[in-house]
Amino acid sequence: MTEVDRPLSGVLVLDFSQFLAGPVAAMRLADLGARVIKIERPVVGDIGRQLAFAGRRADGDTISFHAMNRNKEGITADLKDATDLARVSDLVARADVIIENFRPGVMRRIGLDYEQVSKLNPRLIYASATGYGEEGPWQDRPGQDLLAQSLSGLPWLSGSADDGPVPFGLSIADHLTSCHLAEGVTALLFRRGRTGRGGLVQTSLLEAMLDLQFELLSTKLNDDQGPGPITVRRGGRHSAHAFLPAPYGTYPTRDGYLAIAMNPVDRLGKLLDIAELAGCTDPQQWWDDQDQIEELLAARLRTETTEHWLAILDPADVWCAPVLTLDELIDHEGFSAARMTQQISRSGDLTEHGETLRLHTTRSPIRVDGELLTSNRPAPKLGQHDAEIDREFGLSDGR
Image (cartoon, rainbow, N blue to C red; front, side, top):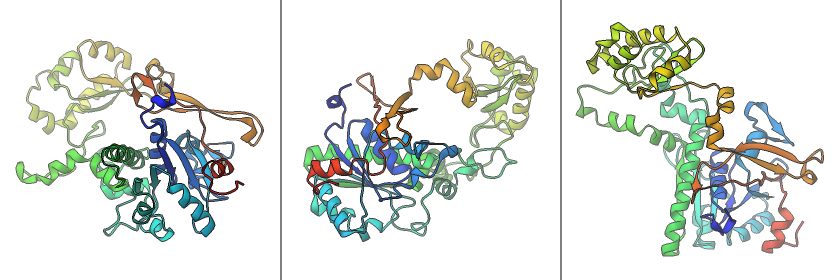
């Protein structure tokens, strides 16, 4: 796909954000064709350069920083310095989009909040992500993924009744916030095309976590429509959902694990030759005897390999799947078929050791006109494009 064919070709995005939610939102826009200029503090840069996922680094930056800031240009600016702020303001006047994820009030104190910059550039789309919104008792709490998960109650939905809270094992609040922020930006760009007017889109880690729980919260908020109050009652050690009956869960096999989704228990009993379950036709019993049903399934499934059971259940169109380990996923032909990886490269004249850096990472999960959205442009070195951007936009005489 040529650059001009990408949906957001010609859109200029200024990325003031740090670490994950904001930078990944900007990256999503870059994948769709936008030109993204990342603006960082001199010397230290984005804190994501140092917060290493699994402790892994490459060429002075964390692997995760490379992954979430690919396909961007980068400049530095001290926004507390009047000269640098004026320079950035000149760039803001020409931009289409700003993305920021500071705590409430920070951009206002700098002079770059939406109210002030919209006077400078009425066509600007301003995207702001916070931890918990701009008001309320949590607004000043640290906007961090685990903390947002915890305040939202999400960790009580995983694990068994014998476990404590079990947080989701990835930065799900950050990632979903990035999706909502990018969605809001593209929607406002579409509106601007009709009206010529810019706009403000706001979301937060908390809102992303509450939206994720829309089924649960909608049901809870309508307690008066059912026989009793909705409460989280996690099941036994094999259960995978606090609000779905047996057999929904993961079960050990002789050589791994098998996930079984919504299926009639009596049908499973017949297919797996479990006499006690073959006559279990009442769906209410799947709730009432959930733990016992799951233990009977587990005892049977332990006797053979995962592939053995798949050979029986797949032809019967039972909803099930092997539970792959990380290594099994990477080695599986299904992973290759998804073509979800790409290579980014940083040229040797920019690396610490003078050799080209090549890293594998994921691509955009979106396909446009049947084409994958890929780019080999790496994350920028800190301040890499200072002089180039200054000259191009006439911000100064260059550095």
